[in-house]
Length: 265
Length: 65
Image (cartoon, rainbow over all chains, first blue to last red; front, side, top):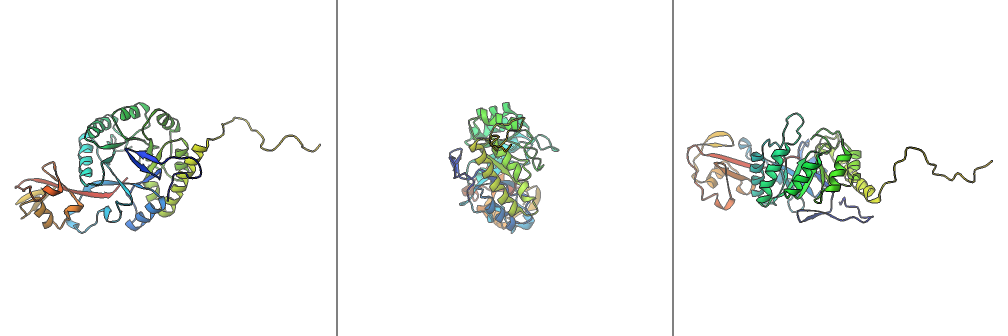
C-alpha cells in the first residue's frame, strides 16, 4: 500500500537517488514479537524500514537476525547508528552496516545525552562529513535547529531528519514552526524522525509540508501495533493531502458558513 | 587459542576467520566481521588468519528505530 497521495498531484519521495512511494518509514525495535512486527510493517505500507547493528549473541547462535523476517527485495533496509555517542563510533557502525551489502544509506545518529537522547550536533556533523566522503547516503537524525540542518545539508547529507520530540517520548510535534522553517530552507528531503505518539501527531507533522516521517515506538508500543500501523499510514496520507490541498487561513473571529441574507423576519 | 569474540574470551581451533565462524555455527552471509577493528569483507574471511589475543567482532542487524 502506498502513502503517496494519488488523488491529488504528488510526487514520489526521492532520497539519494532512490524513489519511494510511501512517505512513512518505520522502525523494527521493541515489538512484542516478530510476527507482529512483520504484520505491522505490512499494514504501515512503509518501504523504508530501519534496523540496528549489534553483536551476534554467541550463546544462541541459532537466534535469527531480524533479516530472517524482512525481505530485502521488498523493503529498503535503512541501518541506523543508534546507541552511538561519538562520531568515531557512529562511523564504525555505519561501515559495518554497509558491509552487510544492502545499500550505502545510513540513518546517522550521534547521541549527546542519555536522558533525552538528544543529538550531539558537533559529533553528528563530524561523522556526516566523513561518511559522505566515503560515499554514504547520510540521513542525519538531528534536533529542530535550522542552522544545524543547514550545515548537515552543506556537508552533503541526502536527507535531514529533525525530531518531533525526544525518541520514544510520544509527545508529538513540539515545534512545528522550527520544522516548517527547516523544510522551507533546505533543498534535500526533510524527514521528521522520532517523537510521534499517535495518528494525529503524524498527520500534524505531515501538514507542515515535510517530505516524510519515521517512527518506531508509536507503532511498536501501541496496544495493537498492526492497527496503529494502519492508522499511521492513513494519518500520513491525510496530513500529506491536507498540506498539498493548502489549508484555509486562521482567523481570530468567527465567519458564518451559511448565508446571512434570506433570513426570515 | 584464546581470542576475544564480541567481548568474550573464547578458546577456538579455527585458523581463519571463516573457520572461526563455522566453529561458532554462524552463517558468514548473515554477519559482518571486524578483526582487530578492521572490517573483513566476506570473500577475504578464509584468507585472514587468527592469532592469540585477537579481537573479533561479529555483528548483524537487529530490530531498531
